[in-house]
Image 1: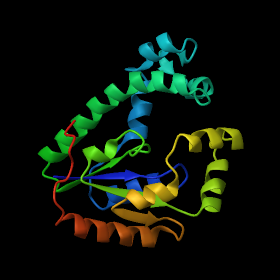
Image 2 (image 1 turned 90 degrees about the horizontal axis):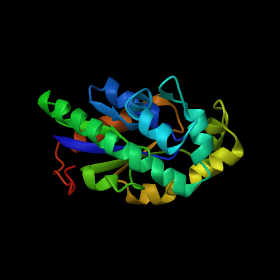
Image 3 (image 1 turned 60 degrees about the vertical axis):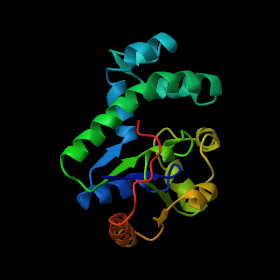
Length: 202
């Protein structure tokens, strides 16, 4: 089974692109949704121990946790040490199930794919992009988003131009859904003949 890594900076349209891969019948692993799931229980005790006051009724309060870590690189590193092993376990379960289902291709949707060395665990990388003005407008329209918070998030992410340079495929979401669907069809055709390239099997 070929594994495609789907990534892109915040506000680029990655979640929509992931949904369209799902509509095309491809199994899709959503790292953000998995974080949300483990924050509802599995990760909460360890997060509360490391960051007291960030859980409510046994669940991580994402707004409280974000306020505590978003401007603190050391705190972010401690959080990642808690969360990443749990995510790896869920990620492997997803791949095992996708392979068992006979799927020829699976997509793993990981926002910080390059930043965490995840490109070694996939066979090709798809980067989702749009222009900077559209990106910024999309993000600032979200609830609880401020320019300061946005700048802190972008500072942790590899610049879009660098991601596009390192990608096997680039999907531009600036012009609506149909061009994205067409790009996905093209990627799946090419993926059918691509070799397994991943060097890290975790």
